[in-house]
Length: 307
Ligand SMILES: NC(=O)c1ccc[n+]([C@@H]2O[C@H](COP(=O)([O-])OP(=O)(O)OC[C@H]3O[C@@H](n4cnc5c(N)ncnc54)[C@H](OP(=O)(O)O)[C@@H]3O)[C@@H](O)[C@H]2O)c1
Image (cartoon, rainbow, N blue to C red; front, side, top):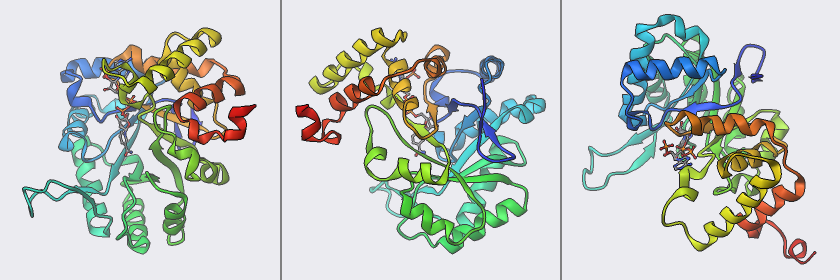
């Protein structure tokens, strides 16, 4: 599989393995190591974490593998994120997520991730979410320190709108190499909020998280609207020769002009491979629009419907 080049020094696999639910996959360290070797054999070298996944437990379990097999480290790219905090202690009755993009927090969050992952650096560090209290100069200082200390090779952001990225960029000379956002047939905000155009202008890929909508179309209680979407996905599955509707959902993302790196969430190898299989399908403009129309008709103008 051809890697996707972010810059002269860092390339990622065309499909990233999302590790958010690692603790729910039910793999012990030996099984996880076996899975990792299978993935590496397939060219799946990129792994996506955040400090908050499993309250640090996902990074820690992966770190156990790296500690046992240090030679794995140079064969993979580790992506992790920081900036989300849970304010549970101050008001225990009001469990809430907030963001802390202070220099102190970002530096210590990244250092804690490195400790859990048992590595001295991560390949790509993402600011997990934008924060209304973000002082871009402080974030820039944190990035600069982490870079100069050799703890982070490259940086990016996640869930940032174009203006939020531009605000941060105005304060740092360090390039932001990716934006990781929610993108799928179930979540098309990126088409309407300028995210795709911004990535095209910057010539950077979008990392698509929840690329099959968190499995929403496979639940027993799907809505009537979702049933209609599933119907169209199945028709297009037949037309393009895909194995299932998940492959069609990945092909829909790959049809975009922007480079998309899906971040899969499944703990099942065969479901991760749907993202790889879909790299070979081509989808016509008409098929792409059929899916857009059924899944999010408001993106297609009335005039277009009438044609
Ligand atoms: N940057 C951010 O803010 C952010 C936010 C959320 C996630 N992420 C990243 O994105 C990754 C993927 O997110 P996601 O988990 O929402 O992605 P996803 O790939 O859209 O969804 C994966 C979930 O859907 C289920 N699923 C997939 N195919 C299925 C099928 N055919 N039948 C039944 N269930 C199916 C999986 O269950 P099984 O495991 O049983 O297959 C899993 O629970 C995360 O691991 C994380 O790395 C980033």
